[in-house]
Image 1 (cartoon, rainbow, N blue to C red):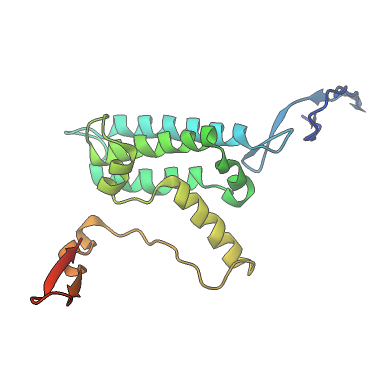
Image 2 (cartoon, rainbow, N blue to C red; image 1 turned 30 degrees about the horizontal axis):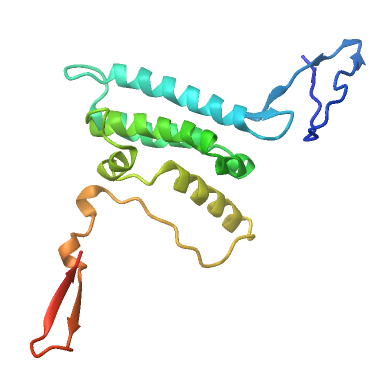
Length: 199
């Protein structure tokens, strides 16, 4: 079924109702889904981010119900599925809507979804902070992952800088111990050298 959407960022009030006929009058809408992206009539993409966050939350709840202690998915399988499938759903076509992430009220929608993911993976109390959950789960915050997805896209297209620092997710068991990478600073202004441990 054909639909009509007028795209404009003008703030002034004007008559935005127009009649276009294709045998019958076309239905005029304010949002439209195209190739999996929810496009609104002002290109703000807040509707798409809300749609992806809501869909991801429902999937996480459905998957967590199938992972029980004595039956269903194993915790490792649940963790792998959540990290791969849900993250791809959240970051789908990120270069198109990433600019909308500069607003805090939009960023918080994705932060809540990642918080829910991390709670299911790490299995901790809900009072744990979002930053601590990312550390315990060994995952990069979703806002940084969005920026990385955009950088990867521009690198593939040859439009980004050739040298960029991109984090690589590593399992917690492979993290370097702080004592192995500590820097020693010797201060020789006194009679006896003093060692300062920076950790």
